[in-house]
Picture 1 (tube, rainbow, N blue to C red):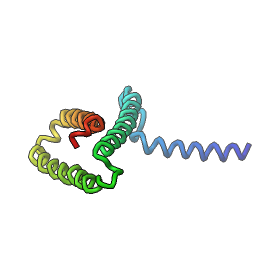
Picture 2: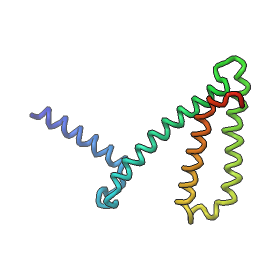
Picture 3: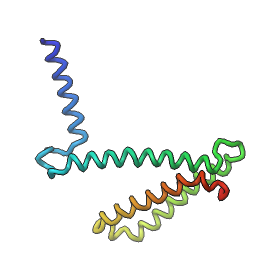
Picture 4: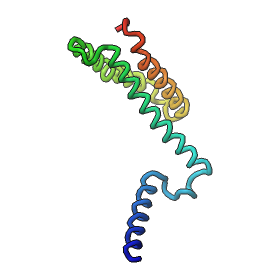
Length: 133
């Protein structure tokens, strides 16, 4: 009985720690009634979005020939364009619209989700358009 009590208290402490990490302070009194369902959908969207992103990137890299000996320079150039070029463009763009960013957060969030989805579709379709690379 004493062994079961120690194990249960350890399990209770671990559960409390996990809940404190993932749920807001004062849960459930501090949130609305639909918070748990919303969180489940967000977790699902995060998981599936990440999975789709991995498969889309894999398709893009296969389309440009990553893995072949002759594709190393192209892969390096593609990585530079994606990481540095797009990053710099993003900084320039958001420095211009930064003043209205806080006031219209939902619109920017929806626009970002739409742009990400379009990018994933384009990235995933690259194996079907290998002649363009």
